[in-house]
Image (cartoon, rainbow, N blue to C red; front, top):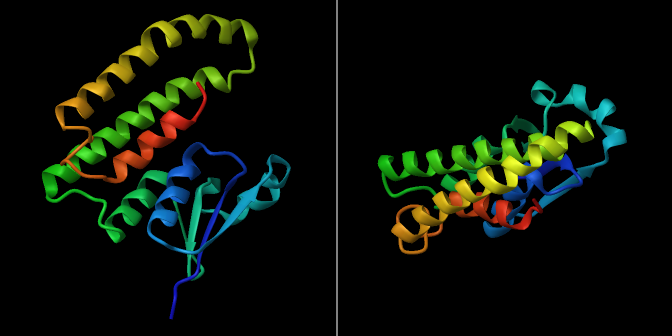
Length: 165
C-alpha cells in the first residue's frame, strides 16, 4: 500500500521548498497544502511545536525542515556514501541555515531604519563571504558540495539560488 504524504507550509518557498524538491525528485505524490498567513492562527495549535513545515506520512506528523530533508535524502539515496560524507553534508546544510538566518534578519525586519543599517554589511560582507565559501567548496569537489554526486545539500543550495536576496 502506498504511503500518503502531506506537506503543510506557507505559500512561499523558504524552508518548505527543499522538501517539495526532494519529494518530487523521489517521485512521491504528495498533498502540497499551502497555507496563507491568515490561516496560521487556526492551524498552529495542530502542528508539532507550533511550527512549519510539517510533513505528514500516513497521518504521523514530523517537523523541522533539515530533519525532514535528511530523512528524505536517506530514503532517495541522496545522503553521503559514509559517515564522514554525512557529516560534511550536515555541516553544509547547517551553514546554509546560518546564512539564511542572516538574510532573514534583514528581510523580515519591520523597522526601516534598522533594515537600512543592516543592508550595507549584508550586501558587502555577509553575502559575498558565504557565496565565495560555498563556491570554494563546490570547486574543490568538482562541481558538488560533497562526494562528487547530487546530495541533499544540492537541494538546499538550489533554494538559496532561487530565493531573492
